[in-house]
Length: 244
Image 1 (tube, one colour):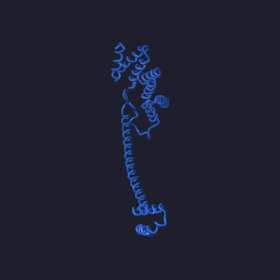
Image 2: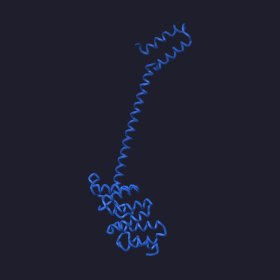
Image 3: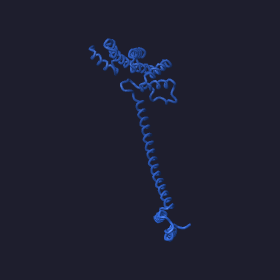
Image 4: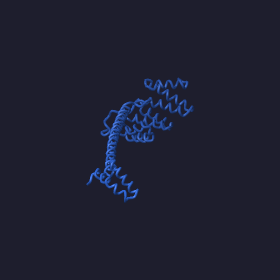
């Protein structure tokens, strides 16, 4: 195969003889091809250009893939950290009593869920619904728990949270009866004074016509549980009602 240099030389040598028998257009075409060969822009040059462009694209793609891989790693790391933070927060929340409530989950710190008894699992499922403000599920689960385990050591807590679910749902009349049930059935429970106080709150929410009934609920807290945490709150309520 002749080299581009010898091809150019041959064309140049042929030009004087060709000019007399070719058209002007053909002559100019030949001149253009000669210039292209001189500049290295023939087929070989174009292939080289394409190869260089392909190599540049490969390098750009490799850099892009590297940046994507780093970004994905950083995103996964951030996701793992967020999951760990949520888990730690949930564990702290489970170990602490809910705000405004007397006591939290009495099963906290017991055996793991895998080895817990049906009684403990049932209570925890209902309590989780209460924490999530899933009132319908809370009512159903605590009601079922009390039916299945009426003598459970967690029965007083379950009865109290059941009443509170009705309260949060806005069914105040049922909540009043349920809070009264806690104080009547479990008078020695720490939930008893809280239940009476919450009963008084629910009565006040029903309107002025239930003011006297609310006073009696607060008076019971002060009289029957004078050392309880709610006794002082009950005294304050009675003052506001003008009877303290």
